[in-house]
Image (cartoon, rainbow, N blue to C red; front, side):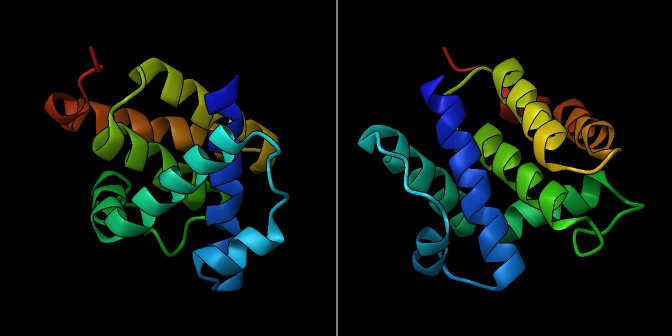
Length: 138
C-alpha cells in the first residue's frame, strides 16, 4: 500500500509537470504532500528517475505505440506510461505484475474511458519486446 501511494503521488507530480510545463520543484508545490516521509521520498525518486530517463522512455513508448506518438497521447496516459516504464526498466525493484496492475489502477482512476485498454496494450507490447530487460527482481 505504501508503494502504491508513492506511485500515485509520483504520477501526480509527472502529470503536473507535463500539463503545466513545470519542473519538479514547482510541481511539488502543486501536489499535496504525503504525510509519510518514506512515501514522499519514494514518489520523488520515481519522478526523478522518469525525468532522468525521459528521452529513452519516450523512445520506447514511441516504438511500442506506432499509431499514437508520445505527443498525441493524453497527458494522463503519457504520465502513467512514463512512470510504469521508468520503474520497470530503470528501477527494477518491484514485480512486473504489481507495476502493471498499479498502472492500470491509475489509468482507471485518472484516465479516460479507454485509458486502461491503451495503457495495458502499450505495456504489453513493451513487455513482449523488452522481456530480457524487464525480468522480475529477485
